[in-house]
Image 1 (tube, rainbow, N blue to C red):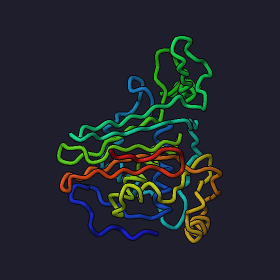
Image 2: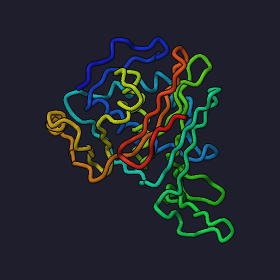
Image 3: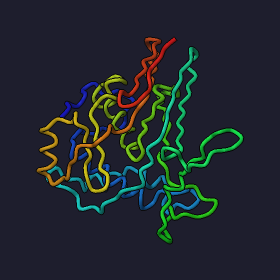
Image 4: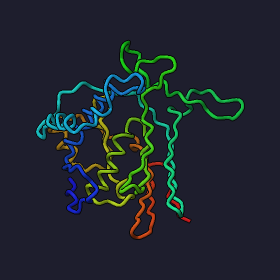
Length: 261
């Protein structure tokens, strides 16, 4: 357990409390919603505004119990692991947050004979269930996890960042933000913190997750497993407008680095 940061920034509007089980249950619910509704915006059967509505969120938060698991279907979206991310902030505080992915290691395994660029196989993110909003079809965009992000405050950029790693990406984005906004971590600390991901009916935990947390999750009924490889990778730059400084963070879980010049 981490203590909640008492110095919550005044620009964070929604308060949360940290609990390993509650966080996990929230992730399970959101993935259920994602798999049922999210697709090419031209084919979605639910409005984004409704998913983000406070009443909608409160309804699902109210279902979370601290003494046991929610009875939810096993949701396992396709895993697309090969993603890269780069972020740059220049001396004038212009910001670039860029992410790219061909999905699997060699994408579609087809290379352009003009450029040598590998074509992606993001169509693997489609479903084949007739009538599903994300069902494969010509001229249609598949669900994907590409999430270059930019945190702003008062109309100014505060932190360009992203997390790579297949279906861990949306969970990882939240992990990093929670570590910074709730617990006062700097960008490197936020990236380094232990991670977990519910996938294919199991709560995959990195070895750095404390043993007492793992045991507590098991007692509540969670099926935990030690993840073979690290979960995702992240890069971020924190812009401190008051001090005039930039602080970069790079994930030790994969190749990459933070450079200043």
